[in-house]
Structure formats: C-alpha cells, structure tokens
Image 1 (tube, helix red, strand yellow):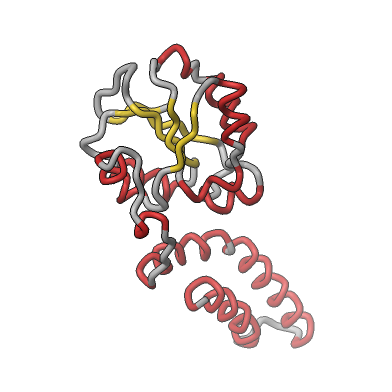
Image 2 (cartoon, rainbow, N blue to C red):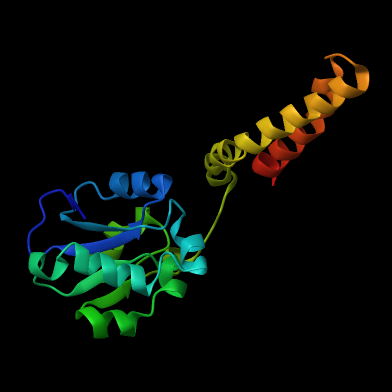
Length: 191
C-alpha cells in the first residue's frame, strides 16, 4: 500500500498490479492526487493479462485489503480498479468479504483525473483500448529481456552441434543462430 501525495482517511483507494511499467505509469499520472495505491501481487504481469489468468483477482484483492489493514486506514469504502481488471474480480464478493465497493475506472491511468472530476463517469474514450505503435514499442524491450535466457541456450546448443559437426568452432555457429535471433526480434518488435 503506497501513499500518493498526502492521503487521509477520506482519500480514494486505487488498485493496480505490480507490473513495473504499469506501476511507473500510474505513479506518474497520479501526481497532484492525494490517495492510496493498493498493489496486487500479479507476479509482475500487467492488469489485463493477470486478470485473465487469475492473479489480478478476487482472492488476491481480499488478501491485500486484509494484509494492509485498509479498513482501519480509510473511512470511505470505495476501491477504484482499472477497467481491464474487471474480468478477474467479482465485485460483489469483494463487497461481501470486505465491505468495500468496487468501482471500475478508466482503461488508462492518464484518464483518472478526469474520471474523478466527472464523479466516476467514464467517456467512451476512457472505455476504449487502443494500442498504437508507440505503446507497442514501449513493450518490445521487455519481451526481448524475457527471452534472453532462451536465446543464450539456443546459441550454446547451436554452437555445440556446429562444433561437433565441423570439428571446430567456425562462423557457422553465428550463421546458424541468426534465424533464432531473427525470430525473437520479429516476434517481440514487429508483431
């Protein structure tokens, strides 16, 4: 549980995942807001994907509310969750187990100030998922970092086989490895 600005017992409680890119974006977009940020352990996966696989879910949210003693910290009983987490959270079960009402906010953190200003009313833009090239490119380095272990293993295995076949280490190791490297770069960057 993190304090944003100077929250008090009447401040809003926002919920998000512990995916680094999301966490950094949320902190940046919430400048000027006084509130609480409750982070769910999604094993470093973004809200949308974690909701689909169950780590951004009802059980995890109930556990975090209990572990942080949130009921003792805030007097208001509203949790603002990202809209993309709705598939993983049964709002009625959260209310039943904790007394907190779940409100689904906008898709993007950049719209949270307008959402609050509009008394929790979302515009169509706030409900829409767009994924332009700039956003896709921001995720590409993360995809490459996740695949580096596999690339190293493939490079090593390729090197062993080429060395055994040719009875020596040659340029063939690199040339045999290039299709694997190309596939990873294509998958991570282009697609």
